Length: 330
Ligand code: SF4
Image (cartoon, rainbow, N blue to C red; front, side, top):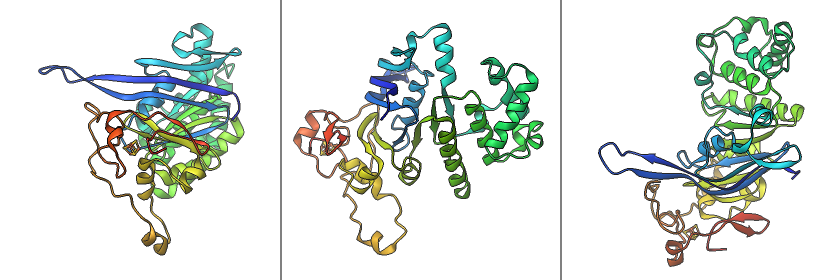
């Protein structure tokens, strides 16, 4: 990996829940996470919905403030906590860290035409010198994301675009400011299967052209494997990273019992191989509540290999066979 662009250090995020009529409770959506992403690198973050993936993405974009720990960004030859950045440095970070959301419609103003969604960031960050140049750049962006001829899209409102076209506009807007880091949060999960590969390839081409790094959030291991081939995957369970390493090594030989469980749900096209596959026999299918997670290893209520230590002690993420695993078995 090149020099890390963003470092997540012992980051936790706690949200209060309830409290109007009853006692206030808290959920730890992200629990003591450490990771880093280098320039032009992809890290696919995989886990079931509600495990804290999107919260971690928002923390890395400084859209949420950590309850503890730091998000460090490499700027002017040193790492600085993103919440300590001010003035020009904060503007630069905001420009360099962009989001591609799951639902592009939610981030586009339904009252504004496509051209009005694309040109303001170009002018705000002085990438274009004037409106004419901004319009020319917007046309190039639309061509780049496969919306051609661009003039056909400039005057359209979001309601007159398909889901795939909307997602392409959201991508065009995110890359318009030439970011160094993109959080793609379930960016293809709302699209038809036929469109998914097209959009994934588009994101990969953008990475080649702009040298962008990605945190690619998905619940789907097959998609993570496609997008992060030759890169890294991190597996998240109830707010913790439980395994992180090279994509193919994890897929060929998952070590953490939760990774094994997730991978067992990925369809295998060959029926013979599918019949041979052994699924881990979970003790329970129920995912524990984040309000009162089990003590020790949070997977202990479901894990087929749980022992007494698993209820007593939280396993640390430590190096095992060239990757990181949080499990007492290792
Ligand atoms: Fe299972 Fe124990 Fe490992 Fe947790 S620490 S995954 S409960 S064996």
